[in-house]
Image 1 (cartoon, rainbow, N blue to C red):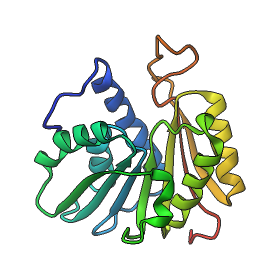
Image 2 (image 1 turned 30 degrees about the vertical axis):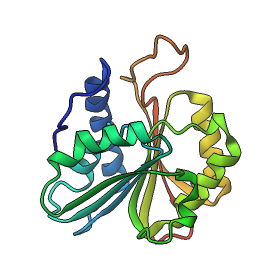
Image 3 (image 1 turned 120 degrees about the horizontal axis):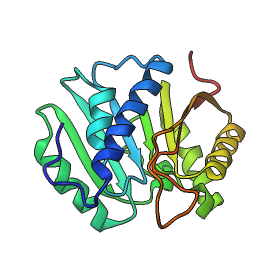
Image 4 (image 1 turned 120 degrees about the vertical axis):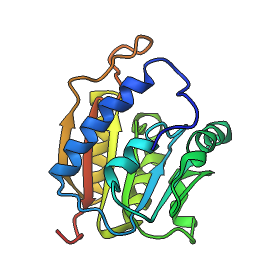
Length: 205
């Protein structure tokens, strides 16, 4: 799946290629077996630049899927819609909605999901909101579903991991990204510096 619009900033193409490699390794590590019609939720997705690589890795042969991105910022959601909806394959139900990603508990029409992704989670900014987001995300997973996160920096990834473990999520895999691109305007941060996958402790193995 190719974007209908170029990415907005220099370097994003390379970031997505590196994320593609990291994601493929992680899915192999968690023994991901794509369902016939996977359901995928991308929370706090922003422009959802990663949409193409998520679908390519999670559902390479699916003729039907449901993919939803949610973010508070309407301009970013509109950009995501413009980039990805024109190239959606028949049978692939893609949508991007402006909304509070931490309040999926109030979104009663959402289905249960096989896979939930949070790229560059931002636990550091507001632990209370992100704890609620993680808690609600875990309850939206199917019994064999996974929650996967990436982070910009080490401390924040550690804090997010501790929070998820306190919410009774088991970390299945953790992959540092040695090729992560440093951010010049944010010392100590780099793109997709860590990736981890979790599932609720009560989930079926």
